[in-house]
Length: 148
Image 1 (cartoon, one colour):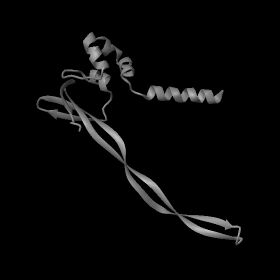
Image 2 (cartoon, one colour):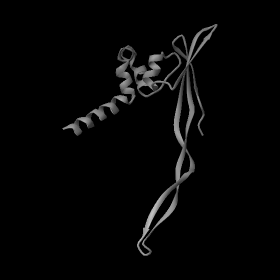
Image 3 (cartoon, helix red, strand yellow):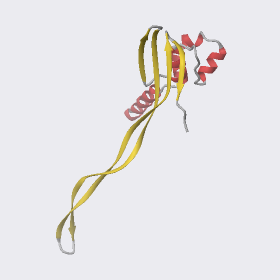
Image 4 (spheres, helix red, strand yellow):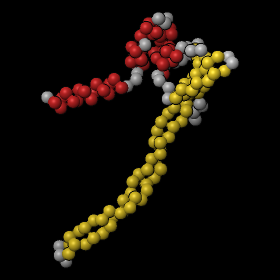
């Protein structure tokens, strides 16, 4: 019984931890339900537009990786930055040696040898792919990086 309960608990945590458009629509249902049908369809497809509110952008593409605040003469600006994250393989590194012993049945002696230890090395990488700029709570600019 306990393993089944533990499995259900783990699945619940995994399911609630994922941020999908459906989850975000449910979370911001008051905002989503107040929108017209074409705007709801656009946000459901993950598309944002100039004039969208912060809640609308959150529903469409989720929480940003970073938020930058700027105060200007024109007002308060906020920039949401979205990034890709991945690991890049950098090769293998020598970490040292491990002492091993081997009993030789022919000579009836214990022999010692040192085995090299290597480990794969990965570097955390991050690349910005989009910035959404808000002025007074509304999207005023969408910047995307070119790919390929």
